[in-house]
Image 1 (tube, rainbow, N blue to C red):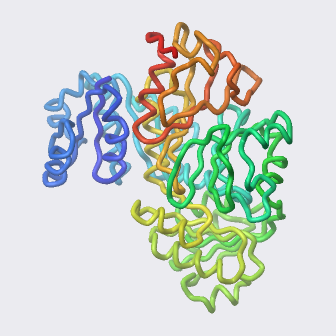
Image 2 (cartoon, helix red, strand yellow):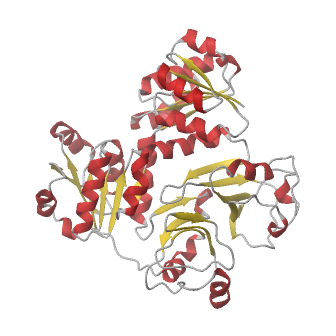
Image 3 (cartoon, rainbow, N blue to C red):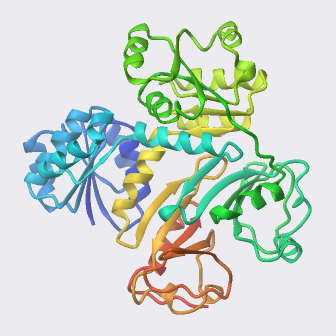
Length: 454
């Protein structure tokens, strides 16, 4: 596939890095010459210095031969113009990053499609909905719903009183019978690995588990989790992410929103009906105390400043808040944030990149999720194409690349947890967990060509 990426920051380069080993021809268009020189010195990517909303630059780049144009600059107007021009010049498909929620309305989407933009993606909107999932499932650290919510992937922590401690996967299966969930990855003491039958769980393990919806209570019981009721939610930051969270949850929970900008507070009063809006600085411990942080069940910090989000979440933890969620944009802070006690980390760049990359990974990829906490890896939902290797024998006889594991299968309205004797059929959607650099190898098993057996 011939892919053009227009960007001016980490999102564009992260997408390029994720696709560089996928047999695509990738061209990056960026106005910063020094940055592109650095990229060229570390990769084989073709780079072009210039503004992507320039017809002459797009023609010079050969955008008429593009299979996909991805425009992810910080300026949504430039992204929209770039995508429209690229399509007019001959590009087959275009994706534009937008920041304004109004652009995602059904009427606006239709208009943009008519102008030549095939997909619109808003990192803020996606991040907001990820936080909503976490608030509605506070016992987990991350979650990812798959096709029609038939299967979900959860990140859970093995608590000190968990029944599974000291037991292997084989022992757990024998004692509790067939389970409708499966551990697909473990992070232990900063080391990530894929578990096997003899793997023994230990206190503090961070475990990615694929599960059927009806098995969540059993999963929590075995991991030592205790469900608790959510009533009071405190949100710091009234930007786009904060608005999405409060707008969608204010009818279900008691929500307080803290925002430093007075003008923004006035605007929020016209948008939010049942949210208590507080004009103040959440870094103030006195303010948090005055606003009842002790009675808060979930604390969410989603300002544009990663340090503020981390600091306020740590304050909330000291006050005894059960669940904290921080928006952390600096990729270097992600592991540190989790290690110092913040429960869930959200990163808009990785979220947007995961959404966009799936459009460039072939028809067999129906969704892609980049894991954040402790494990640098991908959860990929792949479609078994007719004649593909995965349809030729049971899972136990497939030569699955090292560093990957099949977790579950969705077939029509049914879902299954993967076991060795299971036979994957064509058009099944298969959930695969893959460590860095492995997803592309797994993808080949789901393509029409290639037969790989033991």
